[in-house]
Length: 472
Image 1: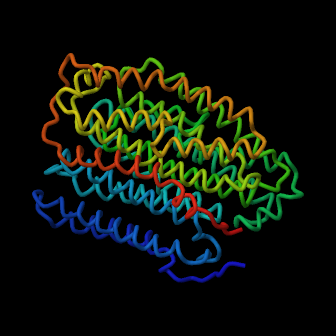
Image 2: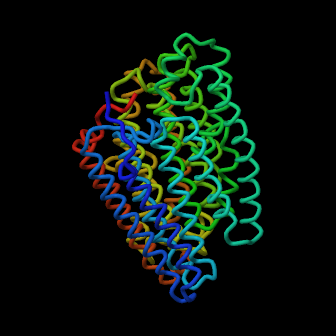
Image 3: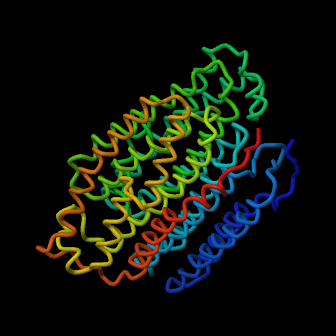
C-alpha cells in the first residue's frame, strides 16, 4: 500500500506554477510596460524549479496526497517534467513577439495556468479533480487562442470554446453517471465497483468522460476544433495547444484505463483501439493536401494522438504500455515544439511554398525543420522513432496486431505530406521570408532538435527510468 498524506510539498511543482501565476499577475499590475518581461522570467524560474522538484520526487516511492485524490508516481513525475519543459519552450518562443505588448503579463500567466491544468489532469486520481483540471486547462487556452483579437483568432477562440463547453458538459454528465454507478469518485473505489456493475451504465459514463478527455487530447471524434484553433492562433499558442494539454489528457486516460476500467465489464481496450485507429487515419487524410503549415501540423497532431492511444488501449494488458506512452509523450512534445519553433522563427511564412529556399538562406534552421518533420514520421535515430517502436510493441503484446499493421501503414502514408513541406525547404531555388532576428526561436528550434536526437540515442536508460508501478 502506498503512503498517503496531506503534505502540500507533494504537489510542489504545481504549487510553484500556481504561485508564479498569481505573483506574475500582481507584479504585472505594477511593472511598467517595458519591464513586463520580468513576469516571463518569473515563469521560467518556476518551471525550472518545478522540473527540479519533479525530478527529486521521481526518485521517491509512489504516494497519494489529499485524500488519495492526487497521485505522485512515474506517470505524474514524467508528465510534470515534460509539461514544464514544454512550457519553457513555449515561453521562450513567446518573448520576442510579445515584447512590449500591453497584455504581455496576461499571456505568461495564461500559459502557466494552462500548464497547471495539464499537470492536474495527469496526476488526478479522482473524477472531480480530473474535471477541475479539465476546466483549468481549457479556460486559459480559450483566452490564448483569441489573444491577438484579430478575425482568425476570434473565430478560433469561439469555435474552441463552443466545442469545449459542449464536450465539457458531456464529461460532467459522464462523471455523474459513473458516480451513481460506483458510489464514489476515487479511482481505486471505482475500479472495485465496476467489476460487477451493469455494462450499460459504465458505457454511458465512460463515453461522456471520454468526450471531455479526448477534447483536450485532440483525438477523434473530439478533434474538430484543432485545425481551426491552431491555424487562427499565433504560432506560440498553436505550439502550446498541440502539445501541453495532450500530455495531461493522455496521462489521465492511461490512469483511467489502468486503474478504473481495466477489470470492468466495459470493453475499454477495444473502444480505445478503435479511437486510435480513427485518429491516426483521419488525421493523416486531413493533412495530405494542406498548404498552411500550422493547419498541416494541426492535422499531424491528430494523427499523433492515434499512435499515442495505442499503449493506452493495452493499459493493464501489456507490461510495455506505461513506458511506451511516457517515452512517446516526451518524444512527441520536444519534436512537435521543435517544428513549431521553426514556424515561430519565420512568422511571415504561412504556406509550405513560403519555405522554399530555406536551406540556402538558413541552413541550420532548415536542418532543424527536416529533423523534426522526419522525426514526427518516426525516422531513426529521432526519439519518435523509438516511441513508435515501443508503442507498436506494446500494442502487439496486448494482442492488437491489426492496430499495429494499420499504424505502420499510416506512418508510411504520413511521409507524403511531411515531404511536401521538406522538399521546398531544401530546394535551392526561391527565398523564404526573413527571420526578423528572432534568435530565441531559432535557438529553441536547434535545442529541441538536439534533444530529440539525444533522446532517441539514449532511449535505453530513459525507458528504464520510466518503469515502476502506478498507484491503484
